[in-house]
Length: 390
Ligand code: TYD
Image 1: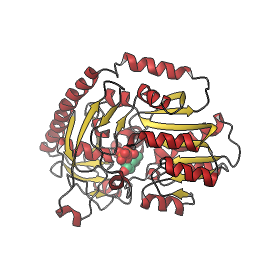
Image 2: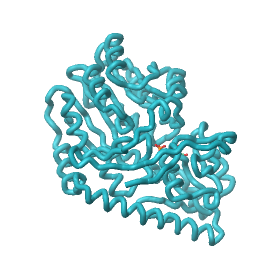
Image 3: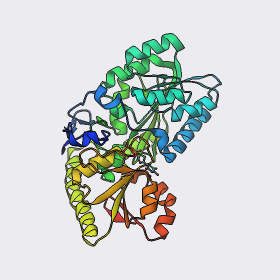
Image 4: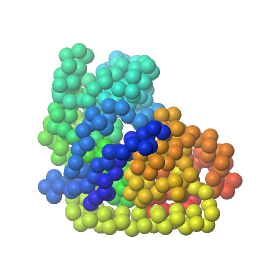
C-alpha cells in the first residue's frame, strides 16, 4: 500500500522555508509473509529525522499522567530498591525519568535529538545525546554497570537496525533486569483505520507475534503484555532474559491476533481499500461544511496530522489555522500543506464553528478540556475511523 510521496511529518516550516522546495519521500507499506512484520520499504536516514526534533513528551498532559502511572507500575511490581539503575531509550525531555528520579532511582536518558536532550539535561535528567545500539550499551555498562530496568516507549518502531538495538539491550540489561517496551499496536491501527500514524519515522508496525519472534532471537522472553490507550492504542510488553512465567494475557493476545488474521495479506489489502474510502469521506465532509459557510480550524498539530492533511490534500482553503500547545510549533507552518500553527489562545478568541481534531488520540481529554467551547455551540470533527461531528 502506498500513501504517496510526502514531506517529513515533523518538518514544521518557518516563514522563510515556505518559499523553499521541500524534501519529500514516498511512504510504501509492506507486509512480510515470512515473519509477519509490517514495515516501510524506504528508510530516511535517522540523522535527518531525529537529530533535531519537534516532538516534546511534556507538551501533552495526558502523556505526563501516562508516564507517571508507568513508573508506578514498574516500581510496584518489580520491587525496585533506592538507587536502582534505570535507563530510558528515546528519553525525549525526560518526562518518564523524572518520575523515577523522584523515587530515588539512578536515572539515565538516551536521546538522539540535540535540542531535546539539552532540554532534559536542563530539567536535571542526566542524558546521553546519541542513538542507542551495541556500542553505546557497552560504554554505559562500563561506566554505570548493568541496568535493572530499561524502558523504550514509542521508540522500537523508529529503529532501523533492530538487531543492533536488541544486542545493545542484551548487553546493558542486568541478568534479572526488565525491558519495558511500548509500541503502537498494529491491531488498533487496522481496526480504527489510523492510517495517519504511518509515516517515515515509523519503520515497523508491530503485533505481539512479530515482536515475540524478534525477541526470541535475542534471548528475550515476553513475560507480560497489555494493551494501553496511548498513540491510538499501543502494546506494553515486559521482556526478561531469564525464563519467568508468562502471563495469561500474552497467550490471549496471541490468540486474538490469530483470530483477527493479522498474519494474512488479505487483512492488509482490505485496510488499503478502506483508507481510499476514508479519504473520500473526510474530504467530502469538510468541503460540504466549508461550502455551507462554516469556519473550521485544526486542533493539535501532531506529526500524524501532517500525514492526514497531505494525503487528503487539506489546506488553508479548508482550515484557517491549527492550534497546538507546543511552543516550538507555534508560529510555524505544517509541512506540505503550509497551514499556520498558532497558540491555543487564538482558538478561544475566535470560537470557530468546527475544530478538526488532528490529535484524535487525545479525543477524550480534549473534548473534556473544551467543554466550554462545546457548550457554546462549537463542534469537533473526529477524522478516524469514520469522520464524525461531535
Ligand atoms: P501526538 O499525538 O502525541 O503525537 P504525534 O506527533 O506522534 O502524532 O501529538 C499531539 C500533539 O497535539 C502535540 O503537538 C501536542 C498537541 N496537543 C494540543 O495542542 N492540545 C492538547 O490538549 C493535547 C493533548 C495535545
